[in-house]
Image (cartoon, rainbow, N blue to C red; front, top):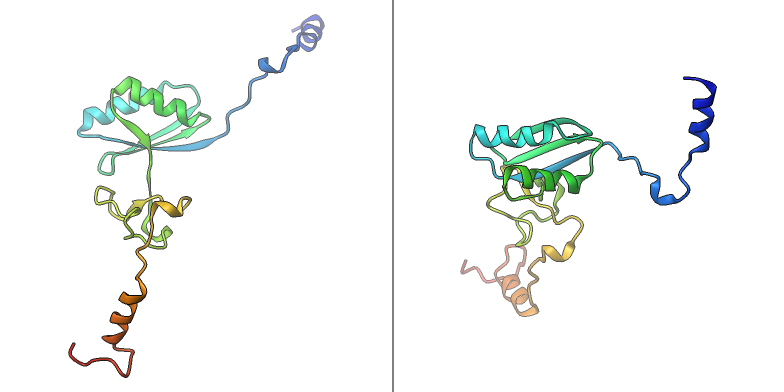
Length: 155
């Protein structure tokens, strides 16, 4: 590489901002993909192995979970898996059980979730509304409570 090449490289800068590409950050993309057999697992891995920027692909067939790490865009990874495999793909919707304050609230509990996981409702408190007792219900439950010394002993 000569001096002329170096100088021409510095002089040929893009004139507008749209030509400047933003670098992708290293990230982990977790997806939920239905995996029935080893063939499905192989198909998902094959769809992602030759993708530019992918460092590793981990497929957990029992949990229907695919984890991709690398310099990739999450939306592009999801679109590619859906296109190449023909399967329905969605971002991983579950979080570990311990991270949710009320894991059995209507919005959080999901019987299809893998063991130890519940729906991700951390960022959206309206997704898991807790049932609040009315004043009448509170009075009736307090009447039969063990902590109330004047409670009815029928129970």
